[in-house]
Image 1 (cartoon, rainbow, N blue to C red):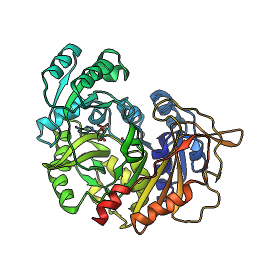
Image 2 (cartoon, protein in one colour; image 1 turned 90 degrees about the vertical axis):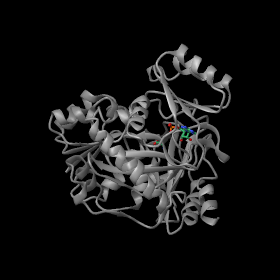
Image 3 (spheres, rainbow, N blue to C red; image 1 turned 30 degrees about the vertical axis):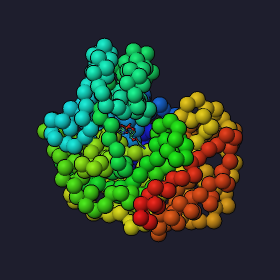
Image 4 (tube, rainbow, N blue to C red; image 1 turned 45 degrees about the vertical axis):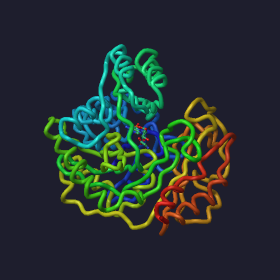
Amino acid sequence: MKILVVGGGGREHAIIRALKKSDGVDEIWCAPGNGGISYDAKIEPIASTDVDSMVKFAKDNEIDYVIVAQDDPLALGMVDALAEVGIPAFGPDKHAARIEASKAFSKDLMKKYNIPTAAFETFDDAQAAFGYINSLEKFPVVLKADGLALGKGVLICQTKKEALSGIQEIMVDKHFGDAGNKIVVEEFLTGPEVSVLSFCDGKTCIPMISSQDHKRAHDGDTGLNTGGMGVIAPNPYYTSEVAKVCEETIFKPTLKAMEDEGCPFKGCLYFGLMITEDGPKVIEYNARFGDPEAQVVLPLLQGDFLKICKACTEGTLDDVDFSFSDKSSAIVIVASGGYPQSYAKGKVITGLTNGQIADCEYDNVHVIHAGTKIIDGQLVTNGGRVLGVVSVSNSLKEALDDAYSEIDKIKFEDAFYRHDIGAKALACLNS
Ligand code: AMP
Ligand code: GLY
């Protein structure tokens, strides 16, 4: 089979590595891909949001199956457009992708179907939002731009003053563009966060192994929110008791709600959860694999990844057997100085051969590329999150030790990474 993966970051690289281990895969394409991905797949420089060109490419090249891995093309209806020309694809259609693309849609869904989440109000008028904030006495509050904003459209406001200027930024000054035409103002929750990705076929939802992202840019959870600076799996806060509650109160009801709303969800549904004192609650849904969650979850999958994906598309997930290894995994992201704000591109990366650590001492360690490019045969940086070191081992401690012992071999100007990925999880395991 000829497979096309749409996207060009670390998640897509992890998906391609999982596809390479699947049966019946003859050729893998990635569009637009990145420098490091070109060692594992053929690259086609089509923007992931260019639906027409992507569909034409898939048709002209007789692609058998497409994995639409990124949020924007899903929200733009790429899966629907491929279906129109008879090409099956992994991912939700445009209607179902609203579960991520519109925070107002997902919050209304949770309210209507009693799925536990933070209390909230939605506004499409800035004056009304200012008025509401002025009426509040309890802070912090959380402001969320309705639309897609590269994971940056969430502001946690400690005071009334901060919340008023947040509304100004999102709704009036349009820092996140049209994503800020509507806003959700949400109750601030506390508790450990857990990411649970799940395979869904419209009716059935099978959760994958849990993981824990580290969203802030710097050690000790300081600095700005990023797309994610490192992940560990499994997440020790996600006990089997918590998993059972999530299954009954969140996962199954969400799939059923989407079906009842006439937009059954097929693909990977990502549950961003917080384990509060009142039980697990949904912080966000994503309509795709998490990035960098996919990079640690997929290496633990025991089963044929392509077969599972196709079963999601075909509505036959109950017929496929798979499980997850009892090992642990970790990824530490190496980012460009300045990320998630402005940063330089084009810095030469050293220490790698064919995209992997040149003299890596561990078979269980590999590099996933997120923002790299090959120019004149040389690998250079081309994004905020540049690459990540992934390690799979018998214990979380070993996985982290191995990743950290190799990471300094990769060098580029102004590179930085967090030194405390997994520290909280290790403390939880030792408590
Ligand atoms: P989101 O993009 O919705 O995942 O939000 C980004 C991050 O903001 C989450 O991972 C949380 O750490 C934080 N966050 C979002 N919503 C809330 C909330 N209601 N209470 C506390 N923290 C939140
Ligand atoms: N790592 C968070 C996300 O993929 O949205």
